[in-house]
Amino acid sequence: MGGLAVPGGRAAVGAARTAGYLGGRRPAVYTEPGSGQGAPDVAGGGIFGSATLSSEQQQLFRYVSAHRGAAGYLLAVQSWNEASAYILATGQEVLPMGGFSGSVPEPTLARVRQLVAAGQLRFFLLGATGGGPGGGGGTAAQIAAWVESACSAVPAQDYGAASGAGAGTLYRCGSRPS
Image 1 (spheres, rainbow, N blue to C red):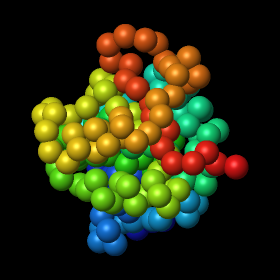
Image 2 (cartoon, rainbow, N blue to C red):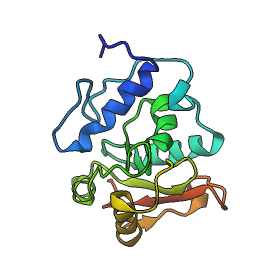
Image 3 (spheres, helix red, strand yellow):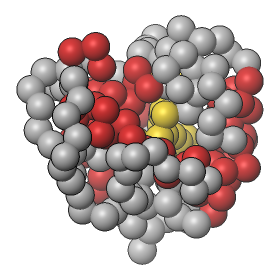
Image 4 (cartoon, rainbow, N blue to C red):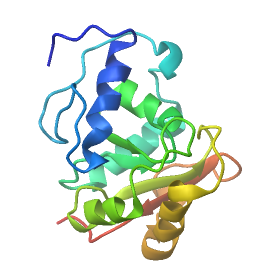
C-alpha cells in the first residue's frame, strides 16, 4: 500500500484498516482483514500512542494470534487509544469499539454479532486500562454487556495477564477454530 503520507503514518493507515466494521463504507485508505497488506513501518507512536507492546500486551498478542484461527481481526477493544499499541506494534487489524472517546456508536451491536457469527472476530478485551475518556454508556457498553453474557472469559493465566486493576478480561466468542 502506498501513496499516502500522513503524520504518524502507520497509525493512520492501521486505524483505517480497522474500518471494515463500517458496513461497507470505507475510507480512502483501507484493506480487508487478512489481505496481507501491512501498514508501513514508522518509528514511535507520536500522538497515536506507543509503538511498543508491554510484556503483558505481548503475551496477550501471542495468545490471541495462536488461537484466533482465520478471524480477520486480532481482537476488539474498547477504544482507539487501547487499539493503537497493537496496531502500531503489529500492523494487525484491531477493532476499536466506541472510537477514541469510547462514545462513538460504531460498530453497532448488530455488526459485532455479525462479525462473530462469520468467524471474523473471536476475541474481546474488556475493562483494560487505556480506554478512551468516554463514559460507560452507549453502544460500546451494549457490546460489552453482550460479550460478557454470550462469550467465555479466558482464564488470565492462559494469556499471562496479571490479576488486578487495569488487566482487563479477555473473552472468546464463537466456535473454536479447528
